[in-house]
Image (cartoon, rainbow, N blue to C red; front, side, top):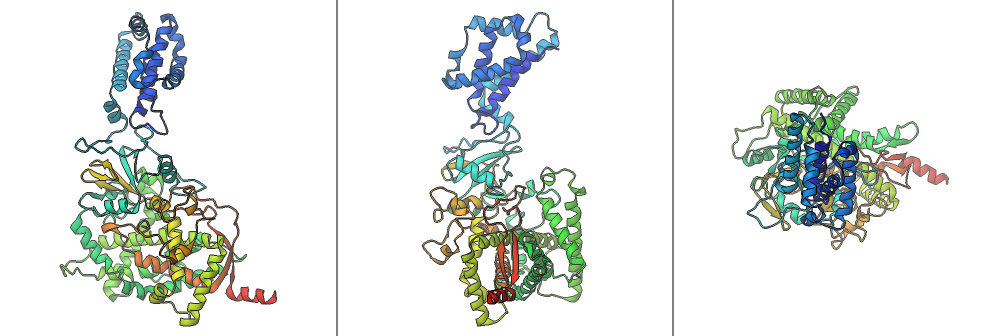
Amino acid sequence: MNISVSVAFLAAALVGSAGAFHGGGDCFSPSRPAASAAGFANLLAQQPSSNIKSARLPLYKDAATTSTAYSSTSTSSTSLAALPNAAALTTAASQALFPTNAKPLTHLLRLTAAVVSTMLLLSAKLRRKLFYPNVTVDPSHDEPIPPGSLGCPFLGQPFFQSSKSFGAGSWYRDTAQKLGNPRVWKYYFLGKPLAVISGGDELKAVLNQEFDGVTSSGSEIMDSGLMPMDSLLFEGDKSRHSFLRRLVGQSLTPARVSDAVPVLQVAAHEAVRKMLDSTDGTVKMEKVCTDYTLDVAWRQILGLDLTEDEIPTFEKEVETWIKGMMSMRTLLRIAVKSSPGYKAMKYVTKKIEERIAQLKETGPDASNLSGMLFAKDEEDPKRMLTSQELIDNSLILIFAGSETSASTLTNAMLFLGLHPQAWNRLVEEQMTMKARHGDTLTKRALDDECPYLDAVIKESLRMRTVSGGIPRRTMKTIVVDGKQIPEGWLIDPSLLLTHTNDPKTQTDDGTSNVDPMTGFAPERWLDEKTRPDNDFVPFGSGPRFCLGYNLAMVEMKVFLATLARKISFQLDQQDNVEWQTGMGVMAQPADGVLVSVRSKEEEAALLEKA
């Protein structure tokens, strides 16, 4: 069947009209709909009917060319001025769409294409519903919806893109800059409109509406088989979330975290031993930091007693599970239950189940799992966590504690390697602490007597934090920074943009405040005038503020304090920093931060000889 003309007409309308709703984005130009129609009409009028068939391919190309010329001199509201006279247009269109020798089915297909194309050209509302379903506007509110491109029809924007120059989260940073860094802007992904929120005041205003104006949408988006959904991270019911937070929180109190410091110090000493045992003196800090946080996971969070042979297996399975959660296969839900990540999660789950059974026989200990197992609700002492709740919340502690803490420590070692004066000051502080208190670390001493250590960790978190948070869904239309976010939209809370655009650290170029070479300045945290405050939110805000905050901070402090006392190091690459470009929770250096390591004793001997 000869339907090339009708297909070309429909294609011109589809390609052009798709971009008409809120500025089309990366795929389409917002000026093309009317221009494409005008160019098509002009071309029809100029072609003898006998040439229409031979002009099939140029028809679309020329229409696009005409579109460009037309859009530079006119707008869609005046597109009729470019049309030929009505008689010529009618004759040309009739001959092109309904040639006398065409079959009835061809006539029907062409008529359908013409009607659909015309409807799409004339109705912005129809275009919106067809190409970007679920993008709504609340007519009861005068405020506009947020600015921003919706991207390709149906698919939306590639929010997960990262770059070598910035790492995970680069798409958010680049897109926000193009829009002028507004506090609220939108994008679209797989049938869902999302509003990105940044800025301390705006972020807290939204997150503090949890359960009333917004609710976690993680259960809808991330329930792929690898995420522990019976955890407080995804619980959408306010009463049940409060219950989970009370009981899980009993395992993470400051007192229990303080009791965990000796276990953390053992894990840190083990990390140092592995570093110094390297055959050529070169180690990858990403591996060291990941092993340390996984060591903390099995020693402290679960309280396991693994043998030397079991440790590598446990660490490998946890890493496989976490990588599986970040994979496109999981995101698109393609045979997840047959994936390596799912099998790895089952291995970790079995370990937790075995540990729960053991604790029920032997009684409580200092592990976080024990704290959850024997926790009792102060509002209802008979109510305790179920086995599934114990498993899922343990998995969340492992995931959050290992992935984010390992990434932060890896980045901290990069920043300290690039800024030797900062490392030297950290070493000096720890040597003073060692002279005062000996080798034993305590939470009180780390918190109260190590301001520079605290500053290094906070500055590392400021420079590179998680690229996005758990999405929220609006339960009703809310207004943020003068923009309406209609009911049913998703909210993408951006901690990264909040840090990047913090007025207290912002620079004229807008980016050097988070540049590894120029932006790292722990000293800013020692002066109230320069210390970030309202826009520093690495652990979130509101009812879902990170419950493991205390454990994470102490875990990182013990590691860096131990390294400052035990080793000297130097980066292998100091001239340029490239970041990993795969999907990830946080940005990480592409080379994993390769360093040359010596013990303090070896360093002292070399200095003495010199």
